[in-house]
Image 1 (cartoon, rainbow, N blue to C red):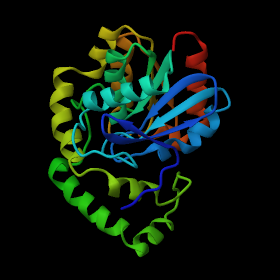
Image 2: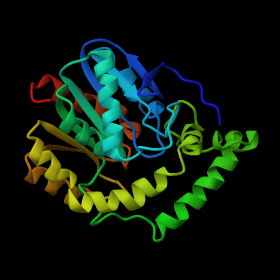
Image 3: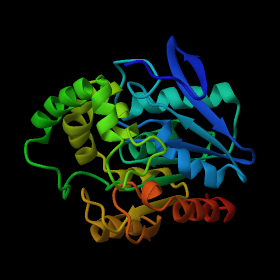
Image 4: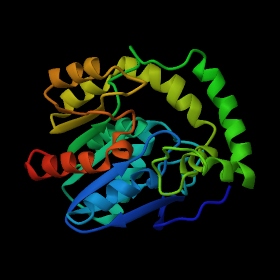
Length: 270
């Protein structure tokens, strides 16, 4: 499917990378998760751009960014580091949602431009993840169906009839899923499980020694909130729990998440 960019297309080592910038002030980078795009932060950005220079990046294999290889978190982080170098921003607070949290932590390890990290709705590893049985096999099959439906006008129309959709475009999640590189399913469900088992995010954060804020949704269906909170708190991260929110608290409660980000940024620790 063809997607229309809402920002600039930067040439990063021969790959067309979609970058959107809004507002002015302290730079804040927002990185989406698996099957996401810059649009997942549309509402959050509106709450932040009056005080922050908000930078959103479509990760490799997602949204309007090209690429079907180098999809792992470290390779993605190298791409985002190159974007920051191109933009010339310093003292960046980087926030990553779900798989984007892996990218944010990896970015902090390779870019001196990062001053603090925000992990949104991501456990340190998959040791207590509650994914449906057979996800690594079923998800690629389901993704193929989603791509087929999203290419049909009736499919996008039906998506707009759903209730409780939290995007400006009710079909946003369907379309974003449809354009995500198929290889991402293995990266997230198979390769990532192995990598996080060897180096969990809480251990990586402890090694970095940078200020870290963790934002969790109380009703996250993938990771137990209390266990996740305990593990990050143990390595010195500040943990905030958004009541009534699920795996994407910035969609459920954008105003609350924006408040937490502003406070962490202004505290001098983030």
